[in-house]
Length: 380
Ligand code: FES
Ligand SMILES: [Fe+2]
Image (cartoon, rainbow, N blue to C red; front, side, top):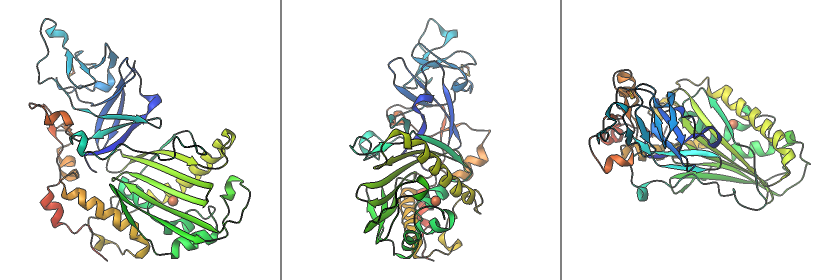
């Protein structure tokens, strides 16, 4: 799990201006709420007075109120009001980490890290969102009992399709996906591959689409950052799916996935439900496999697995993770686990670069030197 990336926090319609919402992400709790101007905010869910959960409180007068002694914190994380100090200003130290927010595609995303704006990866982007000839299904959110890296790697793995999803696509397509070498290309903050093959393809028959013969089909996937995955299935120029998976590691064992399905065919709203249903069947087929993987978390070294050329995109993903390890952005899960219950950590917010004197300890990170020494990516 990594600091300094954008994470989906909640669906937009869950974030309200009358009631805070608590969410867990990377083993730590956050509170999200809206101020009267409609702006969504994301704060660490720990009151710096004596540890109350702000998310159990309420939203009032432009801030979230702790249910324990009524301290009120603004969207910027600064304490606005302390009832027992009604005549004087709250001390400067009374502040909690507040994270940059970007709300788009019906999702509230937060940048969990302290990089200044120019150094951050760009907020999530759905290229087809506003384009003519594309339609989005309603946002689907589901949980998987698996570590997020396992889930991401599953999306970057074309060779599981014919075994895990035998009813989807066409046999030709699946065999081609399996046999073609993966040409994995880097993109800013990630990598992607597209496999092109001549094929007699049928737009997903489970959707009831008419069978058509198209000369060329492309399918592939890619990742941006450690936790955003995109799958492309192009049955033809006009007959395409682009599927966006924004993944939020809840903790070391669970992942919440915010899924936006874009399609360039069957654009009438009446197809939404059927498409959503098929997508959920496919997701469940993946979940059934992912929840049984052992070990739960990806091994630190590829010598603990036997990787083959069809795992090329998985390897490239791990190489990117390694780069972020070397920047010192990887959370030290072992220390976090050991100190749980004794220390309330916070992922440092950008405000920590502007002022000092913060109450919560910064989340432990794996030292870059330690990350470099570990052979996370070794050719099998
Ligand atoms: S613990 Fe939050 S106000 Fe006291
Ligand atoms: Fe799958």
